[in-house]
Image (cartoon, rainbow, N blue to C red; front, side, top):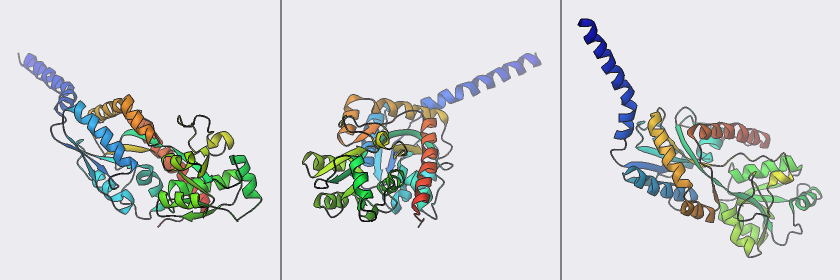
Length: 325
């Protein structure tokens, strides 16, 4: 009898342990989920957070609040999520800026981008390009390279700031094309584009969304897409890697992350609902209209993307001689 009771008890405990993850998944979420965006309202990361927040709110049956917590190049919001409880109620709309380039550009980053976060999903890839002033006498990347080589050290390119993805893409172009373009840092993409339109700088590396209107108006010429794949809205425009095989741009993703140690079932549920939302035709259309290509995929794929970016952007930063601040 004693053995029978003990056997029943062991069976009961085993069943409870097996049922625990399922019960946990069913219990979550019980309250509002907050997604921190490390920038003011308006930029692309904010749009992506709000699109995903609205969709998963419906799917999960709970409110999702988007909170803009800007400052310190995105590290204030990222630090808050890194230190939050790993219960799935506080998430971050992170970027390659907060989790990849910051590793090499900030001397005292207040978090470890790998150990202090749980990857949920890589949401989108901002489509980027090389745009030149309309009056520059070149119509292809090959012609630009020949033009720049004939004027060593005389030409420059604009970017949205020191250490920005666009600064680094100019540095990568210098290395892979064998040219010497001087970097001119602006306070954001808009002044860089305006000075390219005005001819104050002959070219800029910039997002397609910030260049398309000027391209269509004949004020600038987009010569190449910087991502390895062509852009659906400009299908005849070659990618830079088609022209320069050595030009391999690391991803400049926007993605969702949580605190370290999040339960696997919550991560899986969030990933599934967000991946589903990203594939919805109306969501993809809105993202495409602002030059954002859907990535999606699993949490492990996102984690690998972050590690890959840290390594590859680090090599570009080192080659360019950019110092951490």
